[in-house]
Length: 337
Image 1: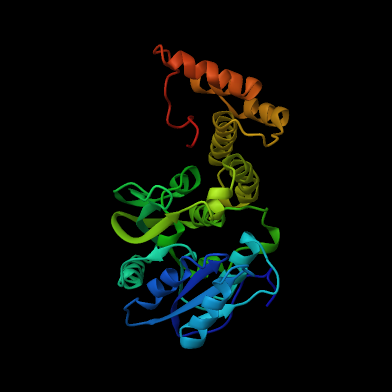
Image 2: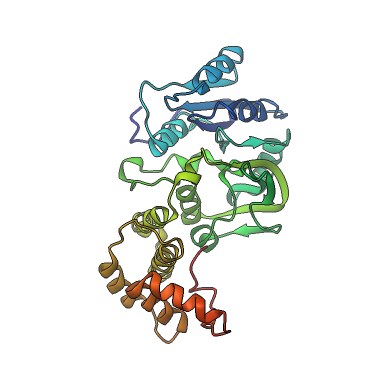
């Protein structure tokens, strides 16, 4: 099967296939694998590991587990490094003949042995939901502090929730495999954050269940991870490119314009806040912003000056805030943090 054609006509007895991408995670990969192996369910579970030509002992550890559990683990080895996006989608491709696809990256861990049983049960009962996610513990391995990744609220997530925020971590996600088969991989823009893409893909095709009061996994934040190395300005630039891709799937031009406006605001706010050295095509985006924004809203006036003057304006505004002078807040036009 070609990497650029995500589809599957195979029949399978596998109920849930778990996508695990792994690269230089020998400190964590055993915990990740064991979290999947400990799952208790009355259906078949398969773990597919996309090992991306690690330079540490990750590959050897994965090979040992695949040899020990050949009926449960499928290892996709690499003779070269594919990179985050290609490795993620080749691993997803190997899972498409299952009914559901779950995710656990090689440095994260599932902590509840009934996680998949619970998620599958909910999705079987709620046929209209495309996916299920839950809250997770975010563990900072540098400070050893724990915090909630998402809000402690159970709710249904719709298009805006999934496009405008980051309401859950991918380690908690279980999704219907049928939805994944229609992804046109050969037409995708380049991005670092595959979980952001999946959020948006779900948002274009329906709603999902989020349980913020349930914790069944841990996301480990450390300086080795891809998210730690990614400059958030670069991620915001990718969001803009990804939005252009999703325009054909949203079928709502008004919503697309709102999302586009928010993405531009977020890009320039993040760039000014972080004092990023990444180059931004300022003037084309300024023209687009002026076409999209209503300047009856003071927040849009603020962003107009932020786009034009950048960090100096941001610093001046932050200084003024100390004297109690703030622009009126509007949650629909403030940037994502």
